Image (cartoon, rainbow, N blue to C red; front, side, top):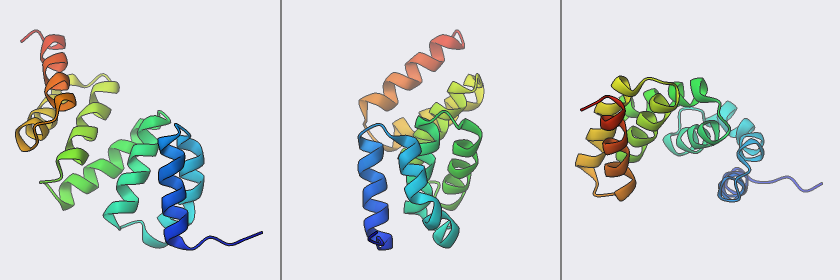
Length: 122
């Protein structure tokens, strides 16, 4: 069996996530999370995999740490907002989604803001 380097493992996890295999991506990330769990790239990829595998508490935890470490990371903030929305916390999600939409002109961001505002009746 061939041993993958850390970079190969990370890239393979990215590919698996792109193929909608979030659990496979998490499996590949396990050693990286152990050794480099504070690395923002590793943490964001893991958060995405947690989100897509419906492990929303773990996604929230990773994303809160990412946003705390880099408040200007619009994607981490957006994904945190979506995670909070999926856990039936739209009022908590809305400020993060609004901030992400203000930081980057991404259609997904503005659509998410509008959707959550409708949920909240405003």
